[in-house]
Image (cartoon, rainbow, N blue to C red):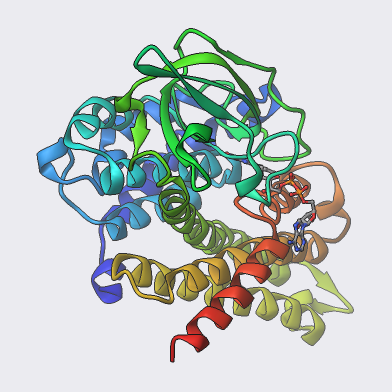
Amino acid sequence: MISHFADSALRPRYMGMAADSVGKRAESCAADGRLDRDSWQELSDEGLWRLPVPVRWGGTGGTWWDFVAAFEGIAAGGRDLGFNLSLVAQAGLIRSILLYGTDEQKETWLPPLMSGSVGATALTETTGGSDVTRIRTAARQHQGHFLLSGHKDHITNGPVADVALTLGRVPEHGDRDITLFLLDLRSEGVTRGPVENMMGNRTSPTGPITFDQVRVDATNIIGGIGAGIEAIYNTISLDRLLYGVLAAAYLDPLLEDVLAYARSRTAFNVPIADHQYVQGRITDAKFAVEATRWVSYGALDALLKESPQTSLMCSVAKYHAGETLKLGTETALRVMGHRGYMEGPHTQALKDALGTVIAGGTAEIQRKNVFNQMRRLSSTH
Ligand SMILES: Cc1cc2nc3c(=O)[nH]c(=O)nc-3n(C[C@H](O)[C@H](O)[C@H](O)COP(=O)(O)OP(=O)(O)OC[C@H]3O[C@@H](n4cnc5c(N)ncnc54)[C@H](O)[C@@H]3O)c2cc1C
């Protein structure tokens, strides 16, 4: 499977597209703190979101490997980490609908999401994001339907999204009441706060969403009442490995730039590329990039095969994603010396990278999950 994916023509196609769209607009979108909806639409029109969706539901019948190839192309061609974080938020949402949605839900929700609508995945609340089981957003029964109330914070695409996969609870259902709701964000009772003022990833606007007695019907519930935890962990698993795929694809061209700079810049009468300490920094970044890339492919393979190792592998991929992005962008800044430290693309890359040790579950939470999974897997032998 992995060798099939490596031959894909999708990567260069999307790389070229993203260089002409995402790449050209990234700076102005970052200055304005907005999602590049034009590029989003162009990529949707090209068929990005149809790639992993079966023909029966309006897709092109490919696999998540095809999506990954296109996604890598966008990361490498667009060179805008934030834009890709927005793509990750929607990818998990589409996978959840495919896996847990009814036929009716697939017919209703997939066509707009494949054609340019923007999705969000809303878990985090003001009281904390790491312990998702503590969420307070809740739906209460009312005349044959539910009314959902609660507040979400830091939601990627939140300020602009059309649809949100939202984690809440249905207290009347009893202890295991965590439930996933699919909500049209134009519904009555939904309000959004302003775009949050983050230090990086400003092309991926995050913000709060408040639900005030939003009407919820059976068609809004994904996977059934009380089935939210299993479904959200599956969604998060795809998101986590996509961070790893993103880290490697985004850093590939950055490391090429670093190498080119190291060859052209001289110190002590030779190119700095000839100094072994400089070489060591570049190779350390390369070790991390390749390890992250291949562990992420392994995690996708595990996810699609429903391997018992899936959760562990996806956390390993996510952990390495954040650390590798941090190392890779810091390496670029260091090798470029004072030029790297001037406010510009390299400081921006480092600021963007720092967000990935928090978004999608912090590094500590990946460690916690990896240890829990190791314990679980060893007790099953
Ligand atoms: C760029 C960006 C995009 C985001 N997009 C989304 C989104 O689309 N949807 C969404 O729902 N959320 C989103 N978030 C929020 C993100 O998921 C949370 O910030 C994250 O889960 C951490 O939650 P918290 O900030 O509340 O920190 P807390 O949960 O309060 O944790 C604070 C600190 O304590 C540590 N900690 C907590 N529990 C443990 C433990 N058991 N063991 C060890 N350490 C622990 C954490 O690692 C962290 O360092 C985004 C965040 C960022 C930065």
